Image 1 (cartoon, rainbow over the protein chains, first blue to last red):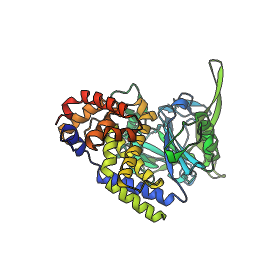
Image 2: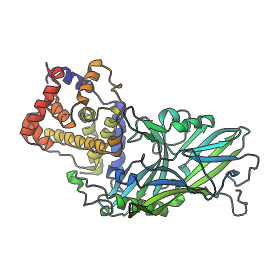
Image 3: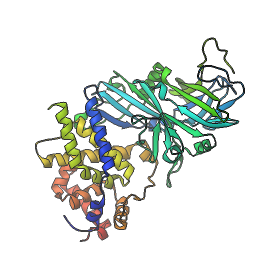
Image 4: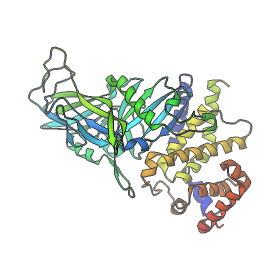
Length: 317
Length: 156
């Protein structure tokens, strides 16, 4: 080998043992699943879809009184929830942000027969109220094989929190350096302010990025042709372009088919020991959008308060 | 080949060629996080596809090609097309290495691959053409232009 600055520099670049072990673990995991089945994952991008995706929030309570996990009404405490700094109010559709920060991927469950998709959604939740010690956000209890959601957090923010995820539930983010995913995290009330720093800022980037709540959705038995402009040929490492319109429609349809799992539990832990939990239900609609005389459909994500009270418990609101 | 044997062979390949895969990824993407991601992707590919087993050289070229293709995917990704990396090679210990990487960063990706394959892996121009699917003339041109830009770091 030639001996120059270049070759010396390249020689000094070495993969860490940790990266090797992670890669091997991923490979072994894929090997185990091969018969039942993840065989390939292709990152996809939503550049074409980004402009027409929007996140809209609506809730069924303006300022509501929370209930504890057993449905008991806690009248002495109140809190509100904001999404991307906007307060959730009863029956008000609140457009929070365009879905421009997210990305996703297509995962083939069986070669060219079925696939899964993942979708990142900017979704910055925050609780406001008095005498609150900490807040726990969780999607963990709703996760199924068909659909699971996780929060993407900055590493330094996450270090302030308690992450209850396991190996499969916390992982480094593919696209955003220094972020991890967590299905449950607890943050001190005051530190929710750092929620506002859930942005990924590049020195040279023209804009900031919200770190999204990532919705990971697996779809079974969906023909690849529904998503690709032409049939993929993986053996020759050929990955045709994604059909974004098909992706959007299928995303919306499948999201709603699994909407029971699209929930976020927001648990407020008060300084006096009281605990209140509310659940946010997410659902998606395709909306007809007119633009310069043309129409297209866009999936709009809604959130609403999910009533966890038993049938005999009066709904507060 | 049984599933177990396949996974075992994949592990052997990954361990043996870990630095090769990683260096190709790093000099392409110029930051550790993306190189780590690509490394993971290539590990997955080694398991899910059947790497060539007729010769070490064929396997080596296959790994290089797969890694370069994965790097292309990353560069085309939504994030990469809109967000510039802030990684200034802080993970690299030596000043000289950081300087070289900074120089490489100014090169088009194709040039970086040619320089790597020629100077580090010591492939011939014809062989590089086969690996990258380009004519030897094209490779020769890229190499000449890269040399002009990297004169200071390619001199022995």
